[in-house]
Image (cartoon, rainbow, N blue to C red; front, side, top):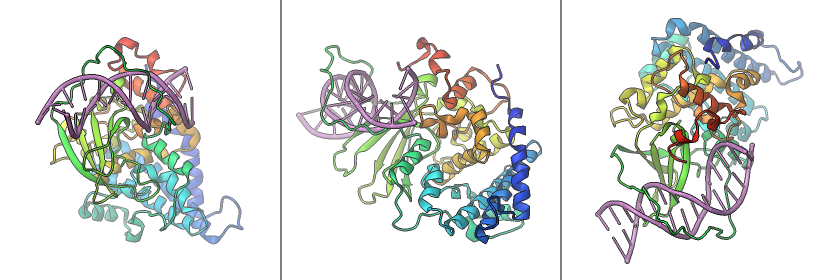
Length: 391
DNA sequence: TATATTTGACCACC
DNA sequence: GGTGGTCAAATATA
């Protein structure tokens, strides 16, 4: 059953691409000529980004085995968006709003995460693009002192897959403990474990755990002896449906509250599924898989040799976000079902890369569609209770 | 209504 | 027995 065929996503936004392309080329102010001159530049940059994205779409079939080329093209798109953001900052658009809209990709800034992994790659990309305005490659930062409003932080958290709403109870209201002992609490796991240090978000709420591109569900928090900050425990959001056993612990460092120590345990079996929403033609998958820890190792937990630095992981995340993000909202709705499902995870789940993407849509893909759709068809409608491993 | 976080209690390990 | 990891009820949010 093909829910969303890849080829179905081209036409709906092609006219808009053309429109913005023309605006971009002609520098025409969409909202009239009385806007500050720089607004034309903003629109031009956005138009460029759309144009480049459109070109990239067209190039995908031929360039699917050329990650460097694809990276370069993505790089150009990012650069155009970054320029637009910077220009907007100069014209009274609150940095907070811009940042909140784009933060989720890790805290590092909206689009800087697509920076290439090495200076060599960056140089190659610049050559491919034929220009090198390096100042545009710098990450976007919020002005000092700027603080994201609650709703913005919330939005960021939503996309980061960490929403769900804080719960503050005034008084304990638990039921008395059950008389029957609970079973199956095993601490010893399979042993796959990797610890990395990750910088906190550079804007907004630094208490948000770093986004690594996966979707996590928090299942516990513990005060750790000798640590000022509690340790948070997360497991993969897909645990229930895919039996994904990936977990992570996030601990803020005592001596540097702006750093997190993240320990990954287990592997992401959920990555064997695909997300049709992001199921770009295989070229994108190829480029992504190059950087994906899963692709490199066959498991969600990468060994040290292949473990991506947070920036790299986020870059993958960002790239996937871009893939959706530059589509017109209405079309995103078509593809992603507007992603309201659970509020939170819809956004970031889309960022989970996959090692192998097929053009077919096996059952797990359908499940993923439902994960991301937020539509009326619930997962329980697809996976009956006996399929759930953690009910 | 579904899905998220919070948080006290439970349990395994050292 | 202390500590860390996990469970699961309660509850907030969209």
